[in-house]
Length: 351
Ligand code: NAD
Ligand code: WQD
Image 1 (cartoon, rainbow, N blue to C red):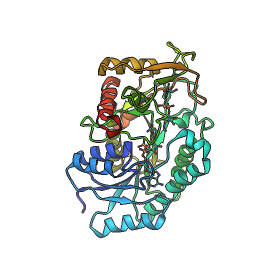
Image 2 (tube, rainbow, N blue to C red):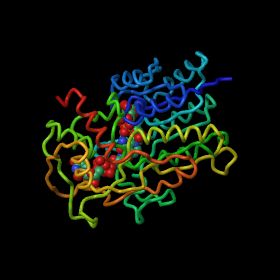
Image 3 (cartoon, rainbow, N blue to C red):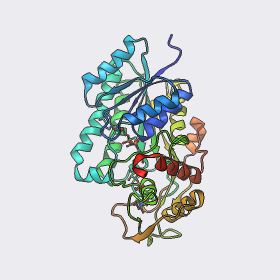
Image 4 (cartoon, rainbow, N blue to C red):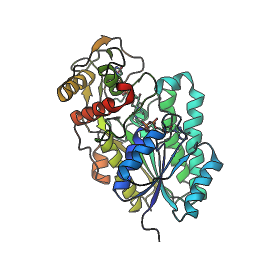
């Protein structure tokens, strides 16, 4: 019997995948990374290897390439490391790009997930953790939002792919009763590994708040634009639930352990969705203030127009993850911002 389960991490060179790989290895899992490097590069893989202090296997494969996926599962099997579970991060995630090129997003994210499910079935791999997003809720009517909130019409083709993949997974379960899936709906991950060995490396001008803010403070970008201070929130700026990427990484360990304890087996559905957030909202202006306080650096910013499509206020009710997975976010907003800044300072483009 295999004592250390091998876990395939698709999108393992990406931001959340690389941090999760480190947490999985620390928890005793054997990690196998897969990525097509469409939004990442080999540096993250080196970072993971140095943090784990082991030669983690890496496959440069596109999830839409079924033959290549089969090769990965077969190669690992032939080496005596049968894959026992998959964490599926691999996806394109830029909301703006998805509006410009919806078919790319449908192809990459939905077809990639379909092929992965097919290959998992061929190799009898029964455990899946899937990266979903709070974007599936759209603009929620009630906050904090819990997992029973309805999926509203997707605000972007990217959001649609997350809703569609969740449905694909649920449909896949019907003819495959042995299959078990945990769907994790992330709120806004930020921060980096505290060693600053790995972190978030967006290509080009960042769309997301924290990478832009850090690059602005580092002098790589112009002043941060605060997209709207006339919203119906206490200070007028939008509210989000920012959680440390290491907390998020650890949630994946809890989810896998839950699956391996057969918690879902025999239940009606075989799947369960969990919100992952801190349960606390912070406004854009509060984030700026917290960053300045913890780093001692001032953030150059100006007030700008609202950004089209922005949700006004959303934060998580994450009590289901606490009650059932035994996970809750432990790190503060300040700690996450400080780790983002430490990572920014270490990046070559921050010189
Ligand atoms: P990321 O872009 O850093 O990582 C995704 C990785 O997947 C990249 O390394 C990319 O090269 C790879 N990839 C993309 N398409 C692929 C394909 N077809 N085959 C193989 N590899 C492929 O993004 P991230 O922030 O780490 O996000 C990971 C997952 O979490 C994604 O599914 C994303 O939609 C989801 N998510 C992210 C956030 C966020 O704010 N970062 C929030 C909610 C959900
Ligand atoms: C946060 C807040 C902006 C940039 C996105 C995706 C969502 C999910 C998480 C994957 C908002 C404001 C931002 C800037 C600003 N990802 N902002 N100036 O919009 O919550 O969600 O990431 O699933 O699908 O849409 O994150 O970081 O872009 O914005 O004022 O330059 O910061 O208006 O209020 P968002 P974000």
